[in-house]
Image (tube, rainbow, N blue to C red):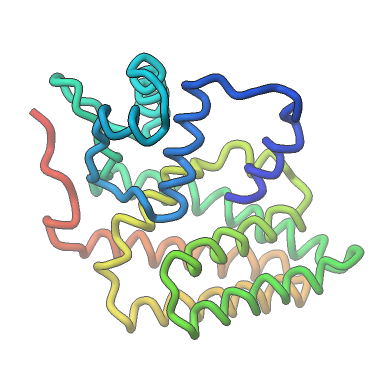
Length: 235
């Protein structure tokens, strides 16, 4: 989420030049966020070395790092794929997300009267609604991330941004977005209105309840998805 990215950029010395493996990692993760890479997509070493103008060594090192972070899957034959989540993995990620975002919403409601927090919260929701109404998929994913980042930032606990499984959450959204019905998408968007209203009213208990209910609905939706939404178990 943007909060974590902002924190990383803030703490990273601007004079330090990225190593080749670091640059490959950054380009692949940014490609996932932008929708250029999607769950299940194969990453071909030759294409990466050619397009990024680096040797195979840095590419292989970058892929190993991404595999260790659960973003890429490596096979015995050195093939690499953007990771696609099994149902149980997705549900576990959402269990963690429910607790952390519920806490973030509670803290945001507690601090929403500070400074310009009410204005920031309204703007985050309004931007999300605009993109939702237009129907831009990648832009909507980006604005939804901004909505959560705003909630976390208003709450004032940067540790939430640090420990959220950010890339796994983004992979989850990209993997399953084509399976949601228009009715499900509309229902989940309406959840954001309820969450925003509770935060703006300064009601911590309601804000946490609305946020956690939203994540639980997503988890139930994943539980109903057909088998083809998930990769075949590796043997």
